[in-house]
Length: 267
Image (cartoon, rainbow, N blue to C red; front, side, top):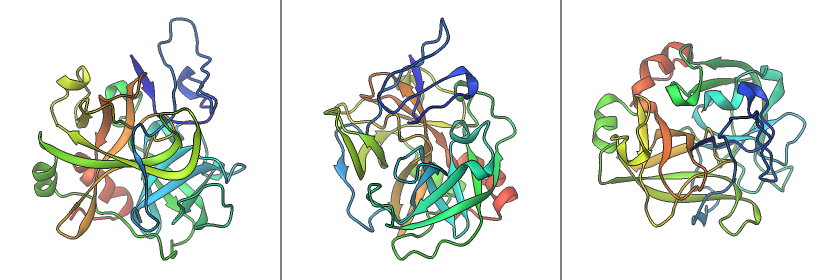
């Protein structure tokens, strides 16, 4: 059973996800929601400098989706987080670790949204979008992550490797947390442990019940390698239970598209 991993009310694509965990969907829909980083830990301030919060413009202390800073004025997120909305609908907060603080980090407006032209639904892949910011991120706790080259991607996205996913949302205990949380999971390019996946995705197989979940959509699946923070994946969707088998857009496979839109070159 699939569900998107976004947090607040999403009305596009006939899906409504709510912060309280209740779902109202059309008849015959199997989309459900439970928002959390499951069995993770609180991130140390400054440890995830590429992590940003993608928020609705009228709700700067609540999260909508996650995102990754990939240049001083570019953010990468999931297409399903922004589909159907205008750029003025969003703000991005960089360098923030506690969302309850309205002054922590740096808040910027979004000037343009670029959704991959082949995206139609998470079940078909291409769940990637780029946000052009209205100004440069300058906060000391924020720094871009790297887009993996084909060599780095093929090295790190292998069975037996691990990566860390981070985001905001409820914990496994059902209580909300405004603090950024993270969890390290095994990854594989083979989609069979996740029940079969679209092309150019990464599967996070079951491992001790650890997982990303709703509220984490668009956020980074990252790995430190050769002194760089590589963004290997983007949180896309997964089973309702949020105990493993999450699916992530495989960023390295979109390096050419990312460069064509933003000018950001894979490393």
